[in-house]
Length: 430
Ligand code: SF4
Image 1 (tube, rainbow, N blue to C red):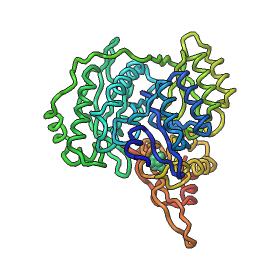
Image 2: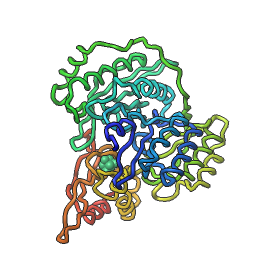
Image 3: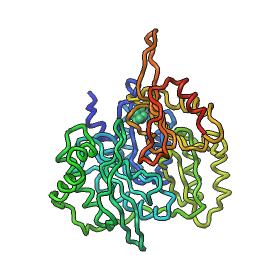
């Protein structure tokens, strides 16, 4: 008998299709080595139909796993130095970064790795009321600090020393709430004790099934600060900083990307990207928040040669799906919560767009959980519900969101659209 609670803590969800499971891999700041990527390809070839999904939280997911294969998949993850512990369920999730191209990324990646090491597989931070999301960002571009339980933004860098603004209480879902600025310019060595206190306040004061944003709504920002002040510091502020796992240089103009549609990459494609990383990017590749794979080229690498290798793998960057910035969650292709076939609908949308609308940023989520972060795109689409027709067949209804109004998040401009109404609406965008 499958214990779903335990499976979730191990980063596993039941898939929409009976008898199949998804397992998510935590990748701090989205970074993994060529060897790890090759190992994931071997696992996916054997157990996951030769496909890997890239998420908007810089993780990888393997779908189509059978229950009897889960133990072997777990052993192979361990052998490759990969973990999914806490990637789902009430735990501190994978530490993300959406600003990997910024100059401060090596410092950001180091902190992401330290947070990952501190919170992952630590019984003190499991069995939380619900998920707890942390991002470390190299700057304010993109606004992703606003959608986290804790969003850390690098604001000053002086050699090895770094300082971060700390935001908290944000989240998307059915009732999106932007986070608020908790405190400014905190030295990096004080971040883990502070975040730990936030997690402990959350765990001690929030009903099961609720996010931190609900606690903040209940007690207010001042009340939350008060709870935080009362929370004893258990982790030493001067805790030793572990050595970084690896540092990825983000030299200007020397970042290239493979951009698979909807983050769906075949193992043949991923292997080639990993081999390109080995040849040109010091054996490191990065899953981005846009569901792409980025390489930061070594100082002696020839960008033209690296681009040629990605082109041979099918990532020429010329197809509309590659040119467009369009985040797309799995929807009901695989996800149990999905209300519609997101990838199919996204292709229909792309077929109707003019050149100006192609240049906008897009995101589409298969339900109100908003995993594709449609509230952060210039155009967001959410499958908001299902309608039954006269024959009893169910059809998705869509909310259309537009950003750029000055609000923190894109706002609904039309709700409960049929597919045809949605396609007519997006055709008029420019
Ligand atoms: S937004 Fe909904 S349908 Fe899409 S992956 Fe998240 S939970 Fe699943």
